[in-house]
Length: 179
Length: 179
DNA sequence: GGAAACTATTTTAACTTCCAAATATTGGAT
DNA sequence: ATCCAATATTTGGAAGTTAAAATAGTTTCC
Image 1 (cartoon, rainbow over the protein chains, first blue to last red):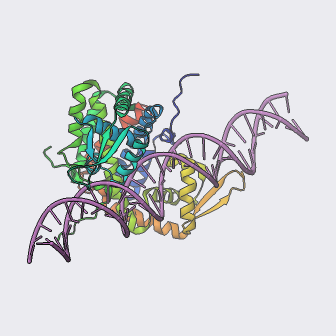
Image 2 (cartoon, helix red, strand yellow; image 1 turned 60 degrees about the horizontal axis):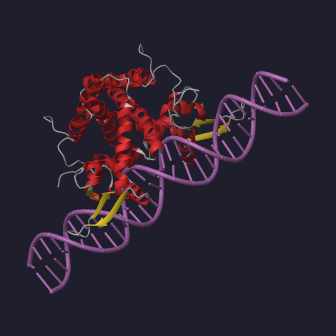
Image 3 (cartoon, helix red, strand yellow; image 1 turned 45 degrees about the vertical axis):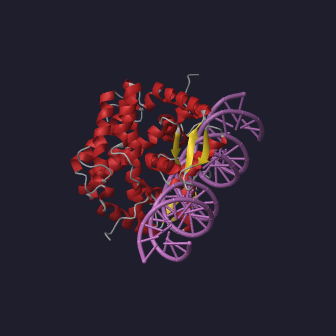
């Protein structure tokens, strides 16, 4: 038996040839002026689902979810291995409660430590442990080896995606036009 | 005070100019051959988060989450307004358990009915009610009015995104090259 | 110095997702 | 006829998300 990847559900296969083209066609029939945006949004949703499921499949053997990996990597990338919880939320662009949550789980596994800041006692500092660093290293290598689930996608195509989606981030106001 | 949109959390604003460019730079320093794919994946994740939060904000006044809306719309688009649970899962590309869940909630609100299939008693058929149809109609109009949260994005840019992401779906094997 | 306003984090509660296991039912092979 | 494998759905549990409220600590400004 080949090493058949256990696809998490993102791997579900639709029953029509291309559900997105099909949806676009249906939408065009009634609201032609919105069909392209609808298709773009649907494409993003589907791509995210596919990519996330592949990435989680790579991380799973290391005992990490994507959210956990991101938190760990963020800490591993800082010089001191320490960062205030709040700042982690901003960097990762997630809700503060989610940070509390992930760090809690990482802490229980001894991958991260937690301590009040000496400067401002409202602040809690998360610190990566040596074990956490090792795991982050390991997981990052795995993701690189797997080329983030899109080994078959040429780098130029990847760059096109980043460029095309920058337009979304601009239109939504996350980015200004000139970055 | 300006009418400051109450952004759901997807609206969180990062503290660096462009986190994705920055991550790309960091990655390039160590694993140059993977930086473009990493950035593409991160872009998709972030775009999804932004779009989902905008769409959910539009749907919220109608009492629907995106998942619920999709299920309702799927039923509304069929001729008979009826579909087996399993097929809904395939079409929506979500886990069967998620279908059970969403339909359960829609059922409790009287937007959908549920009945065992006369042909195969393993099968459960979900059927949209008149109230469900009305709501689907209403919500769809709202999404169109809001241009799916990307009114500011020109239709051509939207089409580029769909095209660029098709490459992902092909590379992952969801689509063959010629569709 | 103290009240009021603001900031950082956590808790709680409601949802959503997925996986894995349990339950039914069907249909094919002996 | 019956057993077994496949199929359809549900249940239970872990993880993640958000909004809103609670807690604690800092700052600002009279």
